[in-house]
Length: 202
Image (cartoon, rainbow, N blue to C red; front, side, top):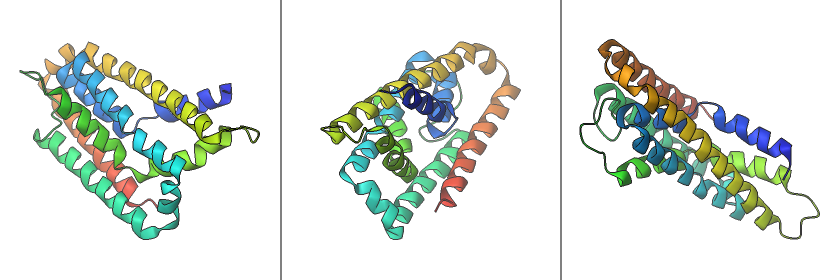
């Protein structure tokens, strides 16, 4: 496994996206446990995209405009729903102090859905992983699975870092109502912007 692959993967993972925002939000609202569950859910959400890339379903999404548009708009709707739930403090994601522990399954499932409903991830893996599989490899699929597993591990570790940072600062943030209001607006705006960007994707 090349250093180039590890560095490229880290750059892709570190750049803020839906998973990062989701993990940060749960870290602020629910603490370290919640942020770790959010990171786990977002990491699991990568699995279907990896599988799709390996078996060729991503190629179908790439070739079929209708299939891509269907998955894309499902993702857009879900991102806008997340933006609404953050802004108005309803639904599965609420950026505020949790008086009781949120169900672990709910946090994981919503993180999973955030990533699974992003068709660009499948296309990304379709274009990204094969570049790092040696032509002489006796089993390209096994090599791709290994690379994908490393990508997932890096994703989980980086997201844990984001989440733990948010959890460490939550006491200060939660004690400042004005900061909480602006954070909700920022998170809602970020989800909305990501939804809009996905809606405009070809």
